[in-house]
Image (cartoon, rainbow, N blue to C red; front, side, top):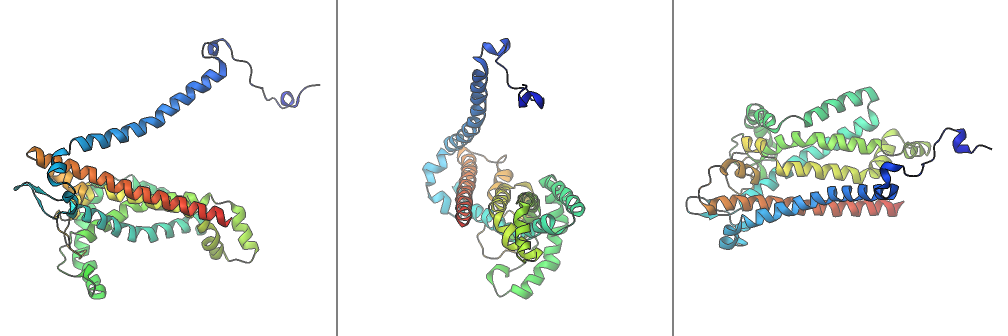
Length: 329
């Protein structure tokens, strides 16, 4: 009697042939595959550790001269050899925060529409153009920011914010067009495709049975989306948000072209500022003297540390959210 595997034409794995015997058969091949993939995974860790060690070694002068004061000092004066990173850390965090405040509601809302409410053809078409937007070089966004966003903020958007929200410190003072607000607006356009495309894929991966169950219990389409689908995909949506945040923190060219490049700490979003990536890009080739050069290297180390801390917090938040969701189930 023929076996069922033979009847359906399925071939069982045969014994190792001659060309694999020198590796110890299939077990030897599996061992080699495991070692190769392990080395590939370890290479990422090695590169990360090497990067941190290299930045640490090449920033010894400012660390020994300024110590922790480097992080809290507001003065950046290459002429007198006084370097403080606080204005650049402040500028990086403020522009990233402005970008996330704008892009998170727009991105998540667009993803919900594309995944749950839009016709499939329209959804696929719009998603294609959104993902194409993510491939645009950052310098192009910078050019658009200089010739479109800066004049718009100076002549239209800035005066409107002053009229409506001018009583708050965030929207007071002269509006030059360049500044924290403009840099945040440009960054929000740049990170929006990451939130939309990833959140849409996460929402589409939610099992259709959950939607049908909610509808069967009398929920409307929007209720099933907001109360069932979105909470189920919450962890993936948070992941897309923090991926976008990582892009905003490290962006260089677009921010450099529209932030104003002035190392100041002020409350007004209209004021020019500076970011860590921008000051490294602007001054690294002009740095004279070891202290100046190594201070810029230490800024790179600070940016790496800020990104690492935020990613660690994001990872903890995502893990806590996932555990809470599993506990609810």
